[in-house]
Image (cartoon, rainbow, N blue to C red; front, side):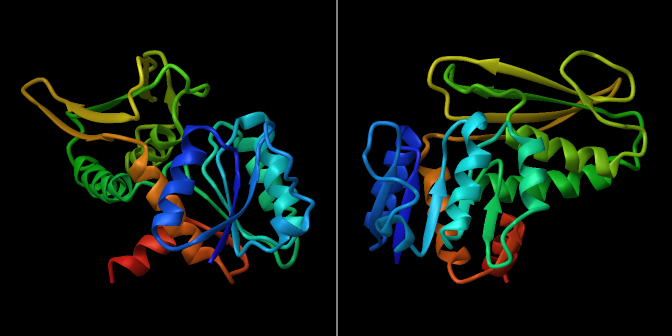
Length: 238
């Protein structure tokens, strides 16, 4: 298939490498250092576009891509309000998948977290908290992945009404650490007076995120509307 890349940083380059390895053609690379534009024949020839940029640019990039008739897989985090606006005003034939994390391992971790939270809801002596660690270049915090994990826990526990980055009764505590070139670590701990239970996902490189994004582009091509990676994973694990 033909793929366009929006954002040519470390993730964009990794996506290009993996897409080519899977036999795909890169028909456009959109970045401030390239001459190709979203409003171009090269971009419009793509079966899908993959967008990894910055929060301030994501909404405009995704909207422009859909207006060109190209389905978009977006992995940029930190633009929740813009994403909601976009979902409410998508072109009739537009297609979009957004996820805070495209790693297949992380999405397996989501399933484990969701199941464990349902179990722990029956044991109120346990209190959950989360720590997410990423590289120093990551602009947003908590990470998109942390927020998705938090939503699963909050949905399962009646006593939680949100999350906080500082201790706050009734809210899930999310700590964030920015260190070196860490691709991403998410650790959830359930503490009780007598013991603790922890689950953790640690990414070894960006390759897992890039592979999942390319697989999402393969899945999204030819579809319409807003889709989640949960839909794709449900099909993969049948």
